Length: 167
Image (cartoon, rainbow, N blue to C red; front, top):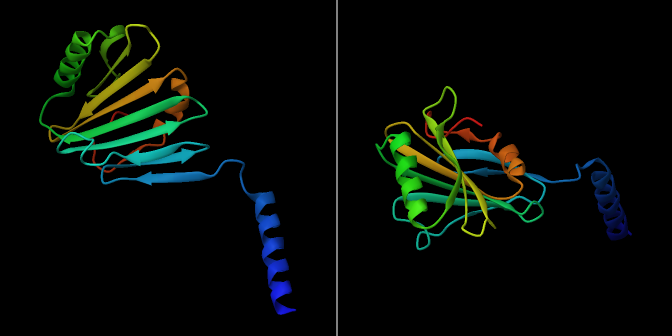
């Protein structure tokens, strides 16, 4: 009798919770460098040390539904963001990437943005680089529905000033 009442109570609570729960679960990714809100089918993964460059904090966020991903690379560096994005652009050009937007400075920030596609134009990417003289970030959005990724990036809360661009 007690067991059946307990099961009924749990069932009633589950039904009530499902009626008041938002359609998409919200989650939060907290790292040593930033916090970002994830909703819907957005998932995150910290790349294991053997897959990331030494000394680089690397995270991948992805939405299967939107078909878009966000790659975060955060590293110790005194390189200026303008110089870093130019080095990145030169390397991408050598790899055969086509630029749809050359590096430009984001208004009012020491941060830069550029956009490029693969040779066959199947993968669209936009990269953002920012830094504060001690640490540098490179955030790259990959996929066609980039506005979905920008909505996630608008929730980014840095733990150190100047390391990330403001979205």
